[in-house]
Image (cartoon, rainbow, N blue to C red; front, side):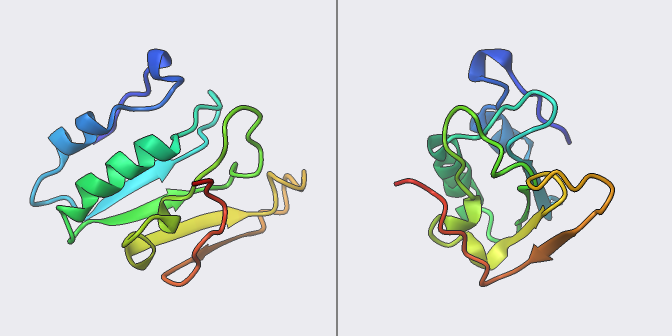
Amino acid sequence: MPLHLREARNFAFDPAELEAKLTSRTKLVILNSPQNPTGGILTRKDLEAIAAILRRHPEVWIYADEIYSRLCYEGEFCSIASLPGMAERTIVSDGASKTWAMTGWRIGFTSNPSSRRSSCAG
């Protein structure tokens, strides 16, 4: 079930809305941050709230689409995989085509579980 991005939250969703949508049937949460086309980014505070929620749901995995992680012009990128207990259940998806202006090359990767990202100010 989709979560709406809120302009008032700088085009991020409210973690409380995520918690309200999780059910016993939920197996995967897809996080896309920074988002295209809004440029919205989940802050470290938001990600910590999301991680706290997901720790109460150990059966739920995270798919983190981080293809725009190096294209942040305001704020700082933080990967949910860098937070305690999240790397083991996060699939990180990233690539070169966006960051290095290689549109059309479609060079990318996904990884889990020991792909801990060092990028998260804290």
